[in-house]
Length: 108
Image: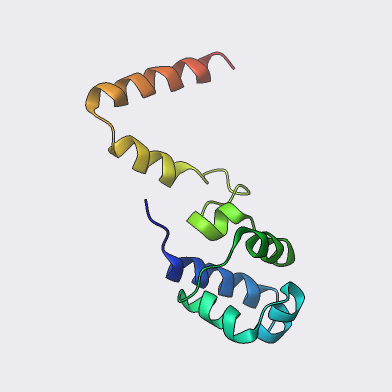
């Protein structure tokens, strides 16, 4: 699955706004230009992992949330990802995954 940089940028922007930070303030804190941060938020530029990690730490969000919307703070954070994964499997593989998951749940 390809990354949607426009969606990633939107999540970064939402997290920045939730922290009441301007683009200027955030750009200064992670040592990038305002123009670059603006392009990242619009999905026109890609951010490297080092900067992504810095950004996530400052904004108190996880890399997983920024990259794919998964929030480990939510009890249902893998529901969508698991559902998408299962849809890609044959009925036989789906049954196998179900049986394995059922066995794991029942042994707790």
